[in-house]
Amino acid sequence: MPSKKHTPEEIIGKLREVEIVLAQGGTTADACRRIAVSEQTYYRWRKEYGGLKTDQARRMKELEKENLRLRRAISDLTLDKLILQEAARGNF
Image 1 (tube, rainbow, N blue to C red):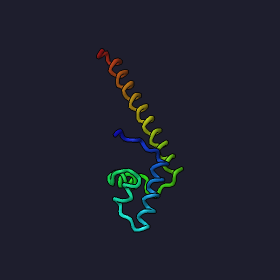
Image 2: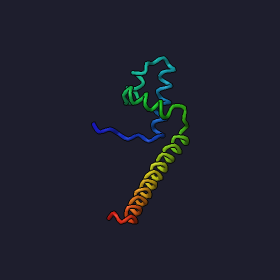
Image 3: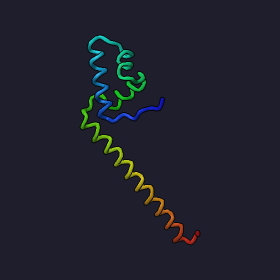
Image 4: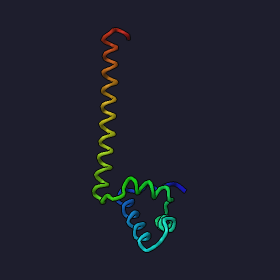
């Protein structure tokens, strides 16, 4: 079965659902079955999204994408600079 990519909003909703099941005396395993994810996934989600509100999670993901874009831009510029330095020395 192919894995489904969950949005931050869906993850936060599922984490809230687990909190309700646990508050009602259910086990973590029961709660994970109810939201159809493994316990490992639940703990990973809780670590990453626990305590966040939906808009905060959305903003966090946007910032992560922007950070990745900027890192790529910096690495491209660094590579261009190194190539130009080599060319200026006449190594080509």
